[in-house]
Length: 340
Image (tube, one colour):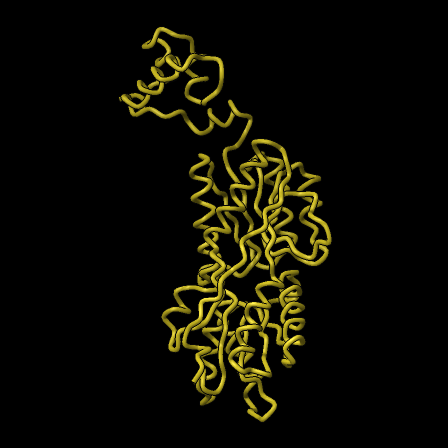
């Protein structure tokens, strides 16, 4: 059976094609009775307007763009990104929008080219960007291209940014972690962070050091890259030559690094938490199922993704830039920091 057209719906109902279009696209110009008749007939015929026609009627593409500048293998195994994507997809589905995702590795030129192509071809109505960088060129580029955007996790701002963004209280999260370790009696801590090119890591490091200084805790800093293997390498570097000066606890920048750290501690013959306690900055099923289970910050990436997507949808509807502060996270205490 051939797919019905707007003209066919109009003939069946004895109204104009414009009235059918207004009713189907939720636009003013028709009575509620007419709108109901159109929608009821469309449902009866299992008929839906084509996405291309609907996009043209709205002067929109009906899609949101997202470029992830990270190793695709890391993204595929990183629960934080998976949760983030789930939240984004949920919000976009409710807004009848699609997600166009590109994973490009660590190539700024390719990321820039992707945005330029999307803008030139009108592939997306707006974009979500992540991992706020030092001297980040993307906000200025997207403004020049006329692409509305939301920066998820904006940091290092003395005043609210002039663009739409979500912000996180990294200093408060750091204090939560350090206070917990202080209560457990730790006086020397290692902090295995993600890449220092990310502004959030600079804020986390500063927060850990400030809170540690308040409690008289010494901190040893180590830069890694969020991958499981980098967590393993960090522990080998920090504890491979165990001495009286070694830390008694390690704070990892994400759950995958904490898993690598646990494996390395086991290989080195060190027990967790008896010899070295472990905390992860992200929670996930990995942390819950590990042996021992890992104390972690519950940052709720699904909620974060939803908030970022809703902020972008609001920007597209109103043109108004807004900043949303994400809720302070909760520390989920598990066996890896138990008092023995």
